[in-house]
Image (tube, rainbow, N blue to C red; front, side, top):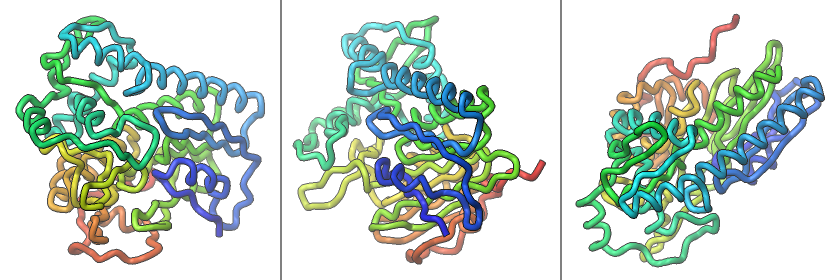
Length: 361
């Protein structure tokens, strides 16, 4: 049986992705492209395909992802940092179409998650020290007075207005940070590029979150869920058009004064790192929704998991708490082969078959 790649652990996941074909299947010749995007390692792995088409596709993907890096990065010089500077000064800013598109997509998703997903909180992310590629973070945490003031004047993505190519913010505290959706949007773009070049069999891995392309007659890609308590939590076989996205406290984190691990995923309601969750995982045909939903479920925590999953129409999701308890939907339980048995927080939740494999033909 092949080893599996652990999602949400970029470098370790990418090192393991070489052995993702199902047992009993000799994989075709593979080619891999790796690069650093959005502060994480990205990889596109292809099975078979015309060598010339593969080379052209990978060159275009690399150029596209590098362009998005220059446009979307939250703290390195980019279009987003330029726009944020203008917002902080009470001014409007011209934005490239890709950033306008992120705002358009983010606003209804923020409303759908009741604000638990909100890419306007980049200033809060920076205050907690998470605008860095070096972990764990050792800088001081923001004091309670600062957080109370932030909550009183909480910025929201719905306060950003689009006027032609210009963005205007109704609150100078709005600082854009699209980390919770950028990889989902980019995954769709990468898949579209590969398809234009006739590529049918590929695994797109952006920072450990994956989207699968499976050509006719090929086997699914096998990926693994990283266990926030160490090792691999389980494996999932991904078919064509399926995405597996996760949010967790294991990769980007800092420690509280008491020594507790605090994830980079912040709760916009409190201004603090989200509490109660260790990992949230979503399997869905839409990588953007999977990306956003994983973050929203992590923030919702065990008490809000079922309501948020229903609110977003998710059939396939799970949440592992920081007490090693698991909440899982019926459909997700059918897709994940667990390597161990966390303590169940009740029976599996029947929220529908949204993550069912596409029917043949």
